[in-house]
Image (cartoon, rainbow, N blue to C red):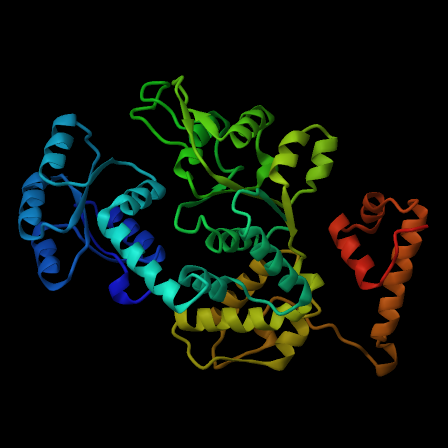
Length: 460
């Protein structure tokens, strides 16, 4: 998206922390934005830049926000204005709307609330329409997806390319729910975003929710929304995640941590695509797609009766497993190169080269934290690097030393050992793949991949 194709936002609020936080959110979300804490500076920015949207606090010391609203709409009638305030009296809201404000948000609000408000504005819709027309002329792949793949999908191994192909296939079925499994740090949310942004739902909301980060008391309200006054603290009507994601994608991370009492309600919402806000009786129809993720063995949790089997069936229409980084060492070099480039630019350390020994050493490391651990390693190394070369001393791993050439193990021997071990374990477990995987200390999907790799038949 070129500069002219981005919405340009001005934030005017006397609270510096609020403007800084919102400015950072807008920049990370692909918008151009300016921030200021006083009216004179705001007028200067409006004179010097073509602003599409003004986020305006209507209550600031020494100035009436409604006067500013009237002045801006008079001078720039095509500009969209979203009014915000910590004091939600209806008279002010009504006056703001009459003076031309597009929307009103009461503080504090979530980032997703302001995102939805922006996406409803005429400016946003016009720009999205123009952008879509240009993209349809020039490419079969949306620019949004192209940028996200370029930034987040790094890898050359057959295993990770198979994951990518599975994600692209899943994107072609926008109503099918997807379960993504894999160890912590493997990049499950990145795959979820690829699925969303290459599907027909890409122009609507992608909402990522960590199921373990919401307190039990707020879970139902967060997912289903609530009516004003339905419980202590419910000071206004609120949409839940299911409503917010209408026509879009709801990504449920750490799905295994969801309490049992909520699982039944989630199941019904997924099956019927109907939700009821807390404190209300009216049903709300919403069309969403669920992409969920977990690093647990979800089938074991079903066996222990701490996760509902019927919910798993609903979530698991399509299944994508992301192998751990230690099973695909070919991806380490391109990942290291990518993150060195990112952090060299971030910390203003250009022309950093990577010692060959670094890659050789990292390829022997097990990476219990997977790609996330590698990313943190590289960030730390770039920060601590005093010259232009990243050496093994910049990384918290030690190279494996081999005292003599005779001690080296032939790769063919390793393959034969692995193949024999898998066959022996399968025989001992009467060819029960799940039981054999547990004995070997790997997932069932990993066992199946290794069986395919060594051409091991499941027949006795």
